[in-house]
Length: 307
Image 1 (cartoon, helix red, strand yellow):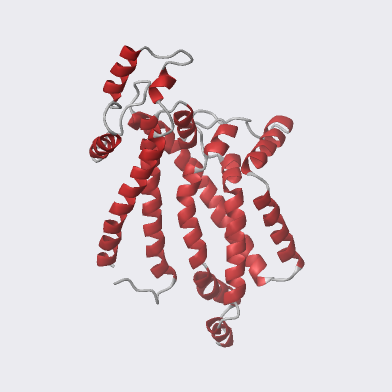
Image 2: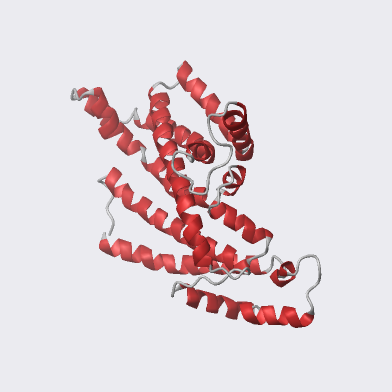
């Protein structure tokens, strides 16, 4: 296990470098960020040259990237064009998005797996058909439509929630935004769990457990569900980073100042340091989440061994 973890950590290095290099190159071809600082008027050449020197934009792109990566390993993600440190923006944005992601993951796991188990055990019955139809509807409706409808109904018309989230963004305020963020993933988790449960229900080890006279609950939880969760855990693990990075629409709808909000502001203002800094952290989240998923396989299925 130890050697496997070390090998995976070493594999993360080229992936991390390649991903950050790609996003660095993509951000730097978005346009001239200095032109955006001057607004509608064109910057005079002297001011533009001074700003480029100040932010290191007068150097070749490869040299900018090497300088940036060198600073990243010391904890310096650069300075935004408004003079604020990117790490300060991260300190305010990431805790909010992490809370939102936790709420979304909990809803996705609890509701999705529960519905998947019920429909998998009652495959072909009315409840199975109803849940499949409902998940298909959820997948078909864009997230921004779901978010705006819930905000209008629950916040404006019925007054059950605040239409926008406060600056503190407490867990109670993030329940509805978390539901919106997790809606599509919840539908996929439900379908994955249903399919896996229905397939494994016909397996030999399940029939053997039933023949031994084990209680139904133990057969479902200890044998059927445990082996059926491997594809679900794979999806949820990769979905953690996707939820954090894909919260732009949800955070805009509910006025949540998290990672999505900062990324949106950085892209609109062509603030390369902010965009690259936040995406760098999201790349690390993806890599760590995938490593944890691989390690969870051995917990769910003892037959899996890592050399």
